[in-house]
Image (tube, rainbow, N blue to C red):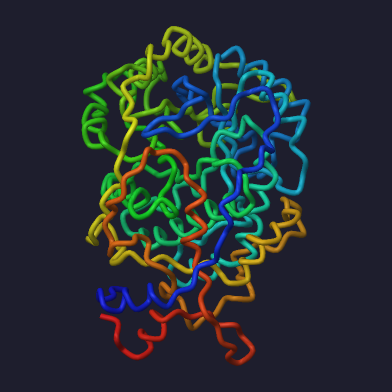
Length: 465
């Protein structure tokens, strides 16, 4: 919906925000690797520029949602291949947030490997079908699982970053999900701050949808620090061998994204249209790109039904294929650039993109955090629901869900009416995130808790344009 500046101002005045004491962050990290932080538009391990160099790792794929980090025999087997590839990062899409990961995370740390972690699971994720399913799936049960995942991994120094959504927007006509993704981004940053964890980078992994990927980059980087992502990840399959930096159009992407406010990296790459020679690796870690990009993750480790994969698996044994051998060679012959790679130490927030046929986000409102989730900020999330068969999916809604209210009912995503104008060093400043969590007033109606803000009341009065 579109709200006038007067209505937006009234709503902003009326909305109450919780307070979080500005205290020293807990030093809960364990493991031998230094924590990676965000500076400007790059990652750093201490004073050294950090480039993501790795693979996507989800044996069994989406059809078999199992946690690969607690299968210690298989992880031990695969870590040997990770070391052979010479990688420093794996991306895992599904974990069991009710289990301990001490042993698996130590295996990775001992091998010099960081984790890029997706926070969602098949049972606890947003349903992008329409406005009603989005509102219904964004509830306190969903956030409890997300926050429990943060609790489970925050102590590990080799937790590189957390991805709050993967390709939720995957077409030109489902951008209505964007405000919910951004609200989750805000909530995760606020929870990290409220629980006094280190500044764990939080951000989104986007499909490379030609019609709106640029709008996605801008949207998730606009507004105050509390709602902006700490990085932006792209699943990019635009380079199909044989190709070149200019032939694949990567020069144009570097040109478009120069000046972006936070680090960008490729959360997936590796087109399989032709034989994968991995020539994009040399480009990705060259100074042609490192002023904007911070590396990437080859897709994917095990061969699944989609035809990608670096190893085949039979009766618990893995066999590297030719793609593995060629990727190993590509990584080994491509060092990181010397120095800082031309990164930008000081960056500026992006301007929020205007609405269009390909971007159906008409204003800067994002949903209020479900009020019943506020207790997690104060008390912690508790044990996660895990991946068991007896788990009730959060998409069915929480106690705060109301079928009669599926519009935006929350806070402004930016403090100045829709365009990002703040400047930042790019460091993750989660202490400011809690100031953007909205706890709306509520009333009881027909025994169903319905949460409203001034914006919602005014909408009911016909004052929303």
